[in-house]
Image (cartoon, rainbow, N blue to C red):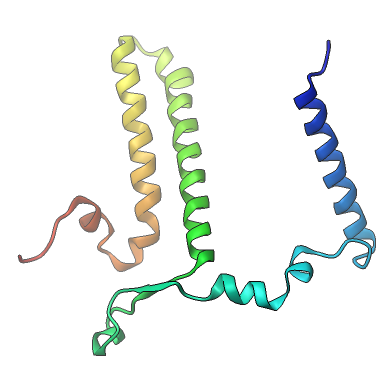
Length: 146
């Protein structure tokens, strides 16, 4: 079996990463960490707020706002990527492993697996807001009063 150029490159990159990790574990001075190379100025830049969401007044004691930083945006993007991959894997698992053992039509299996993917996204996306006890109401647009 012939290995393609892309696979060869991937193998070389994995081996190089393994060597760097091994050097870091053996002697930290041989391979400095990313935090050591970046320095305090870059970390300060990543943690400096770009803008603020929410109130900046007396109401801040009741509902403090949120400072949006580059790190927060990177974390949100990483969360969305992991959430999307997890929902797709769950959807595929339902479609290929669970629903194939039922007597449902192909279209019904497809719709149920998509519904499962949406439920995974809904529950995973609202879980961080669950502490406020308004997550599902906020997601569904249910408000008290007008």
